[in-house]
Image 1 (cartoon, rainbow, N blue to C red):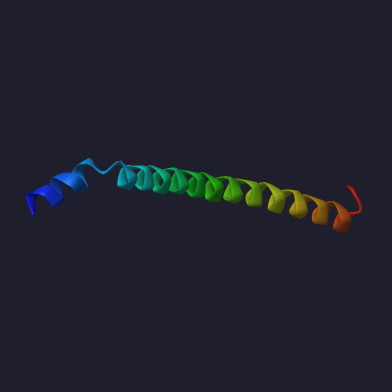
Image 2: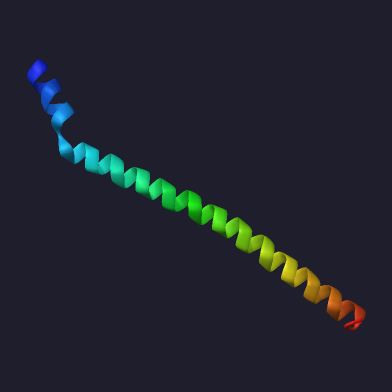
Length: 58
């Protein structure tokens, strides 16, 4: 049993999987953040355009 635990601790395949999972989580978190900022910017542009159209550009 101790041999299995030592083998598990030194198994590098599991480490690579954890690294990929961490990298994926960083990509997802940064994508969500960028999406929120971009969404707010686009929303503001649409609101400004709507106001300009409604007021006739004044």
